[in-house]
Image 1 (cartoon, one colour):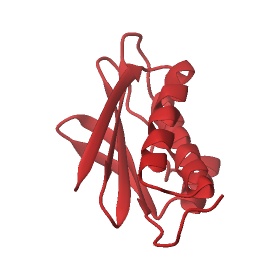
Image 2 (cartoon, rainbow, N blue to C red):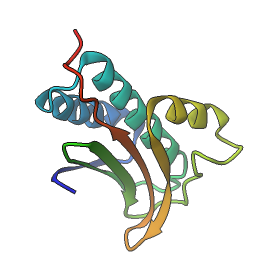
Image 3 (cartoon, rainbow, N blue to C red):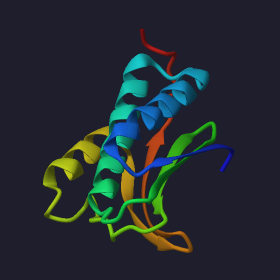
Length: 132
């Protein structure tokens, strides 16, 4: 990928405003239109909420990593510290999350990697001029 920004906050919905702020700021710096920034922020918020549903212990933190190239934006989120296993946004237990992520992203899913379970999304960057 290209450039990257990482943010770690306590694993609580109260701190998602900071994740949304980071995503919105990156979107602005990338000259995305207002609608694209709002869609990306909503999608990342939903992704984080799904991940936080699996958090079962205090002391965990939510890590959000945003990477981008000229063609796409990729966001990956995972829990650090004690946590439970998140439900995938593709499981039947999260049909609304799945619909939201399908509508707002080009791809999304769940990975098991060295950091544990990660939820991710990918959004293609529009080649049009920013909307107002």
